Amino acid sequence: MLAVFLLSFLVAVLVFGSIDTIAQDTNSKSGAIFRVGLKSITISAPSTELVETGSDYRVILDALTPAVNRLVAAFLLPEDLKAIQNGPAILSRYALVEVPRGAEFANITPEIFKQIAANVGQEFGASLDATVKDQQDEINRRLKALGASSTTLTLDKPMMFGSFFSKPDAFGFGGIMPIELNGRKNKVVMVVSVVRIQDRVLSLYLYNSYVDLESVNWARTTSEKWADAILAANK
Image 1 (cartoon, one colour):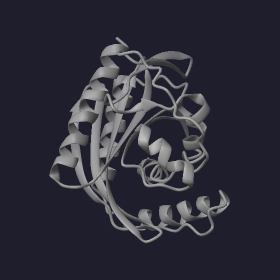
Image 2 (tube, one colour):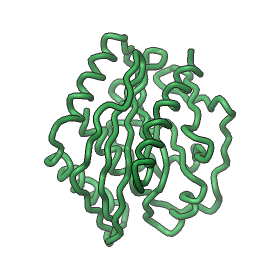
Image 3 (cartoon, helix red, strand yellow):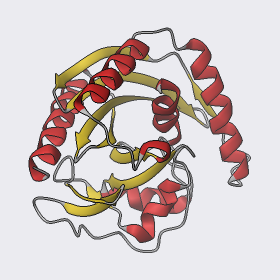
Image 4 (cartoon, helix red, strand yellow):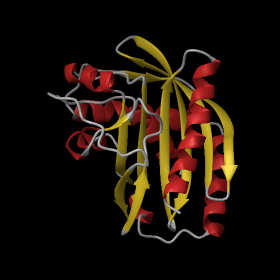
């Protein structure tokens, strides 16, 4: 499971495509409705400055979503949508909502969800050296397949922070991943939140460029509030 989380983290760093116009925020204050496993689930934006791309532009990020997952929603800064018009770009702040294809229609009981939380927690505390190398190779393979043969992504060992929050129907873990895109170095804070909604399980990925401790605090606080808001909207 961690390999899927990590791959989602790495591939989401890069976006490819040509966008002529900026997607409009069509979400209401409480969120928009998305279909997941025959369920109608309301998903709000994690913060006011992020907008959902809409189906026309979401496919760009869907191409970089691991094959074992399905991208449900994607939230970007308007300026980052502009930036990717010129090719690969490091996104500064964004969020993805994904569902595992193999379990999209499975009923996730509270007992199963507790086991998922335990497994993810254990894996986030494990050594990730080998996994990082495997995922780096996979990212570069995907870049070449997308025609970006001159683009090279280099990854370093992630710094995992462990648990950020834990609740009956939601838990979150975070970390920092150093990356390098064509010689440009950056560090990205990632928080993976897993939520149980209407007996379905969703993974919420929130990313923020690392500047200082406040970057981590923002990601941790925002991810927990986001999970709480989605759970509240679907009661």
